[in-house]
Image 1 (spheres, helix red, strand yellow):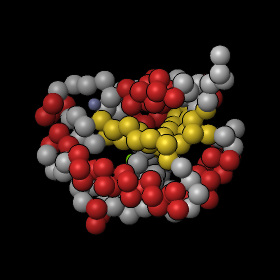
Image 2 (spheres, rainbow, N blue to C red):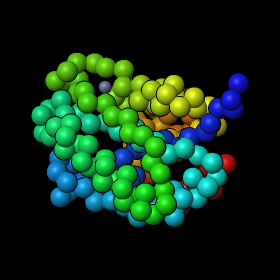
Image 3 (cartoon, rainbow, N blue to C red):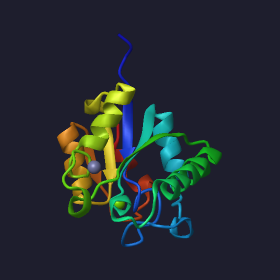
Length: 163
Ligand SMILES: [Mg+2]
Ligand SMILES: [Zn+2]
């Protein structure tokens, strides 16, 4: 059996790009935060980097999958240019008021479970960094350690909480 890998899951808004108070609908409002050195450090420690984000704005029709994929391609490219590989993006396109309940909208653990399954990740060696209590809840429910930060708090400040 190949050894399972370890991962750091990252919430998106308020962690990788600026929290704007609501769903980011347009590329112009998508501002990447400078966590380049911190994520490089986690990558060097052997962690795969994955994003897990609620995108209920899709269910509301505020933006579409094409605009969202532009944002994610941009985010991936900016980090790639700094030597950091964000391996994959998992997002929940649902919203309870528009599409009903789902298993993936945080605080549900579905997005994390998708990543764990897809990449054969060991949850007990993995983390989820988010700026909302629901991120920590989702992490706990998926068996990974949740780390709560303030919105836009530099990830460099919590690196000592990660093995
Ligand atoms: Mg957030
Ligand atoms: Zn969902």
